[in-house]
Amino acid sequence: MYQPPHFRSEDPAIAADLMRAYPFASLVSVDDTGFPFVTHLPLHLEEREGRFVLFGHCAKPNPHWRYLKERPQALAVFMGPHAYLSPKVYPDRQRVPSWNYLTVHCRVRAQMVEEPAAKDALLKKLIGDHEPAYAEQWRSLGDEFAQKMLAGIVGFELHVEQWSCKLKINQHRPESHANLREAYGAGNEDERELAAWMKRLGMEGR
Image 1 (cartoon, one colour):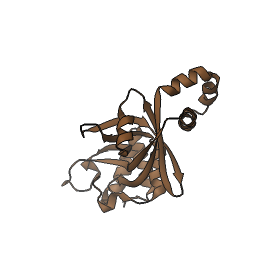
Image 2 (tube, one colour):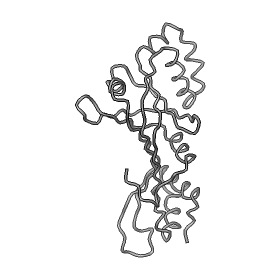
Image 3 (cartoon, rainbow, N blue to C red):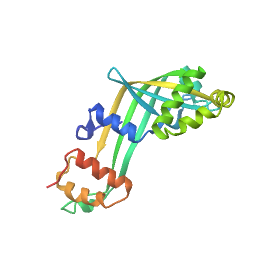
Image 4 (cartoon, rainbow, N blue to C red):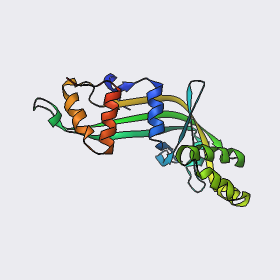
């Protein structure tokens, strides 16, 4: 992705926070014709010896797992909060509208998870992220039902080989920061999240 220096973050803690807060990712690789193929799915993040590893799964009828098995390199995109940027935040009139957003792109290498016990462990990671209380219900459904459900999915570990984190919140225009934080702070959920990130990044305005 295009990365102007003033929007680039090289802090792995920030990248991890974004991936965990916005886990519904777009996984992109290529199909058998070489055309991009996208699956939208939640991914669980772990850190191993300073490297990111992502866990996810797709339905067995979804051909994406076959594409990943044959061509393991892929791209996982996490989209954080985003919002319109009005030129009204600037003190002068010679400005144009734009869009602010936070995102993490991960270049990954896929490894299939096809053994039932390993798939079950993978599902428990995702359950732990989104509804820990459901783990008890999952266990109570019985082995026969669980095995049937597990047979219908293919899991994968995505080993992150390279990542890029872009925080585009008008950092290069400090004269806009005070008005922008005020506008975003009174806005919708995404805008309030961006205002919180501006505070986290020390964008106090002047």
